View 1 (cartoon, rainbow over the protein chains, first blue to last red):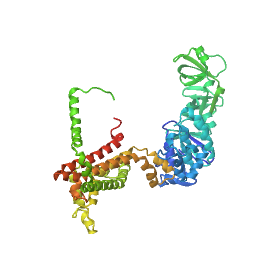
View 2 (spheres, rainbow over the protein chains, first blue to last red):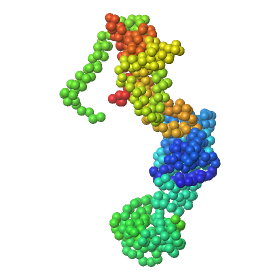
View 3 (cartoon, each protein chain N blue to C red):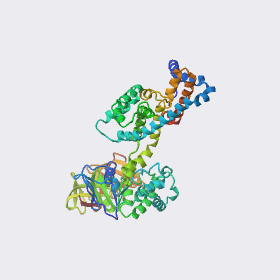
View 4 (cartoon, rainbow over the protein chains, first blue to last red):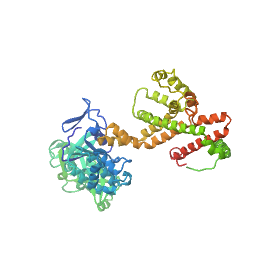
Length: 324
Length: 261
């Protein structure tokens, strides 16, 4: 995979656990030698596996916020921040900016998770790096603390003028913190774009599941998409290989074959049933598996349990089609 | 731990095993001439042996730290051909009879030894000197420090070093400001263990450095000499001092070796 990061944008590398996100960050920082490929910053080659060029980590001007922060346990908070910038005065200014002055002489172990994260951020930013890398910046925090820390982090990230890249498996984190997403699966680049582009037009099962929509892939044929041996009516389907997205809310369920206008009607069997707030998600097994979202009332009325045969329907106009 | 009662025969053997250690120690404490202790201890010979023992054991601990910590670092971090063999050879003194170590040192640093003949050319002679005592003690005691520090290096989280590098620290800075402080407990434990072993060193010392009062006669040597020259009272007192030192080391490091038991 290949990507370019621009100054002035926050980029999130999004992918499931084990996709190779942390490995990629470590490689950019020079902590993991490249077997192939290259890293270039401002036109300067930092590393090139082919020519064996290698600029050591300490000369790369890359700030790194580690997942568990890795604050030096034997140094006070101010000495942690001063480690890279080599000035207690500058470190004290950073603590001031982060609202942490009162902890200057404390040991990192005495701080809360959110405070530790701010110290880690101050420590990484104090030497004035060109690039800031963040590895799962909120993963080490309690769920209850995340919203506040996320808001703070967003503010601090926008105050930094260099290149910013963060890695996460949490779509909420990616969408709220980043201007651009790069989706990665099994070491490969799957999709990139603004959060809106990625969530509205998922190009992988992983993103579709994160966003919670039905993603089909097939061959468009004048108003329909052929998925396997089934034909799904879709307004706007023209020709070629396409993705088709159907929101679960657009899928209606019936005990008997429905009358009326929906173009897509077929029978399946109820699979997994999952309560999601005030909605229920029902997986319908069949030739084209779909997820439908109904109210708990509707579910009771249908008398659905796992294995019940059920009819589903959705309109051709509720299918969003875009080229694969 | 699940507690249970010991069957009779296990209990008896266990008690015998424990008594085997306790009775001699009790004997030492009971039979030591407490009344003469102060006089025996402050006699010129005893004081000299005590002083020499402290100087030599602390010097050898310092030497072991200077050479042993880098050696442990290499063992823990660097893969080089013959690493296993070199590591085994440097660990050997832990199990080697000390007197054999003394002979080996003589053959290396003695007047006609491998290196000794060269050292003699520049006027340096190590056998039968205080420097020889330090050398003998270091030879026997340093492996304890190396193994302890190596274990500490292997179990430390190396990502702290990565963090330091992203902050612009070069290797030496990483080593002195991050690695060493993080493994400080291991270095301390290794140094204490090494010092205790050096303090009790007998075989290699007497073989390589001899037994000259004030120059190479350390406490263990003095204890043995007093016993041989019909002054057992003096040897009891010096033994008691060494026992107390060992006890202090054990109590000081109990969390490390004895757990919470």
